[in-house]
Image (cartoon, rainbow, N blue to C red; front, side, top):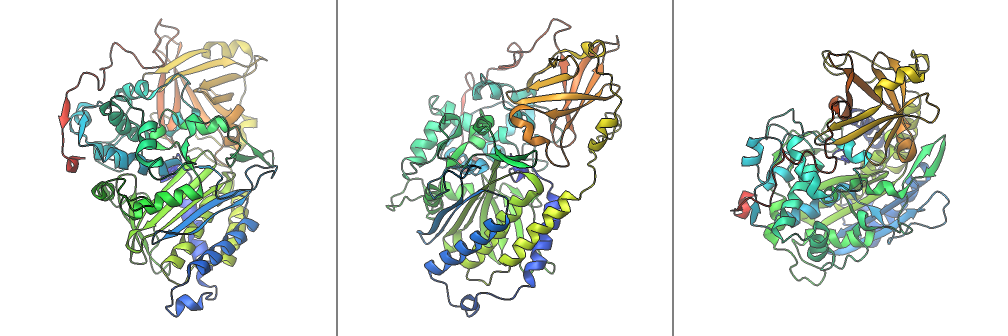
Length: 593
């Protein structure tokens, strides 16, 4: 989920999906401020490599400085080089009441860093069955590498994951719906981050392994052999006492959020459900940097499998931030998206990396294979103002320079100045205007500060015609009801997607979340446009809802008026092919992945 960046990469990268243009401008300001700061590492400048303890000390002091001027209450990191753990530590507190300090054992959700586990698992298989997606070309020609390199051309549709699929939704049921997932781009046309494709790739392996679950395969292939005993899967956890709790700013105060939000990843667990801590992530990085060996130097995964995941799948230009001269004193250029990894070049060194995000946990993992060095950082805190991106990126570059024996070009004094300026700039932003799609679909621009002046006819008689069930064969059901006072419409989608709707004009409403997702109401982009459609007979026939930021509106057709209802657990079973079960196994060499 960048996003995000999607979680992340796009979301959010996931999951992560913040405003990348704003982050780029802010990060440029940070870099320019940092360049003006005086040099601070005479030892590295003289060409003498720092000792492990010196690197650990410098990182520790940098983090303490950041935590003093940053809103995030919890941070964890691990740094490795040449098989050694230079630092594995935690900072801050696991919850707002500060009853428990973050340590190297505190668990964080790693989000889309999970994708590297899934890609490495999938890359071990030399046979795979046919699978079906949105059209015949993709279904007949797509390979597992297409799925894992985000080149299927399918939109991310992150909103469905954010809302939380119904509790009864399984991977098998969800995968059967993919044939109904709309697409606006051709196969292999462009890079589009998609968590569902990672889920599909993992599900193929589940079928090939005799219906062993992805969680079981990851545990037996990686977690147990690498002694990652404090890592697991969010969907299997009920006790979050040793986790950094998600938090957000609500009514000007930071509050802990429901830990149930961690489970919105399900059933797309192979795309982002692993949790871990600094100690275990150090083991994971050393495993990757040693090309598949455990701490005892025994081969856990064939080195060729690790190298396969790093082969370019989608070549730049990709929608990721880059640093180039002369604006920056260094260069960072993205080269490709591979299988669960991106490849970039930083200061002339090859860098393999990924981002992650689940709820309010945001993570980064950077590897420098040529010097056997790696950095993992995860930070928890409110989503406002994109400050976590600034913290993560500045810290990652600082640590990178220490590991590369370069003079750090990001200075701690400039970082705090940047964060303060970013907070001020964000708080002074003007009203947000919702981006519009093609005028044939939407011709309405909405200013979120003008809702109080919108024409309102929320009396019961005018709302009654909207009440009902609306369904989409891929994404399931939207339910429209009235609140207890019969004064507003209530929108329900998934486990947590609950909104009160305020009427704007005509068939247009503005939704604000309540319940577990109410923290999404903060910031200039608060709220969702909901538009209803009328049939030629004058009846309310459908509702349009954006499933992908900002303009990918999906039509949910009304089902209760015409005697139809889609099976929200698996689509219309009479129309769907039965995936995986009746297809011949296709032989395929590993290079065809």
